Image 1 (cartoon, one colour):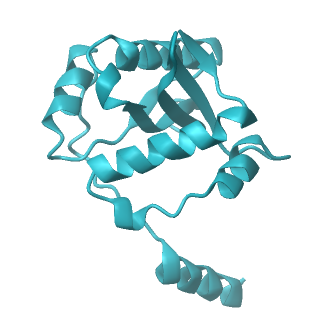
Image 2 (cartoon, one colour; image 1 turned 120 degrees about the vertical axis):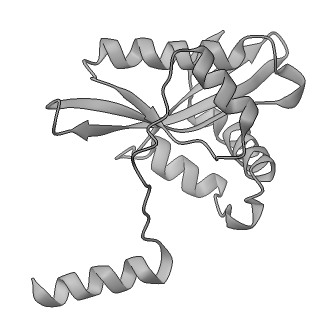
Length: 161
């Protein structure tokens, strides 16, 4: 079963995020806390949403996403930030169900596309995404500003503005 996450799911979401960070060899970069997740997912101005995959025993996976916008399509889109299914629940269709629910939500909301990133070395995920009909966008390079570089860029922009 797939359902929207609630604030009561924050501890489970954090656990899934930490497991995903471990799997992706990025545990050192994971600074999420229960408080930050509660504020940013369920506070007065939610910045993202989550779907929870459940078995009879409880939550087994999640998809965390937010809206973006395509100027070329002049339509909103959905960006899938994280998709994770607990190791013991893999191979049972939960990941596929989460992605299908997210695709259905994108269509219902009038979105033109559903985007996400995958680490180059994650062959199981790449194979899974291809099996759904997803195509890699290899002509694009992802850039990121974070930490001190983000602050410095923002300060320089403020000085000119």
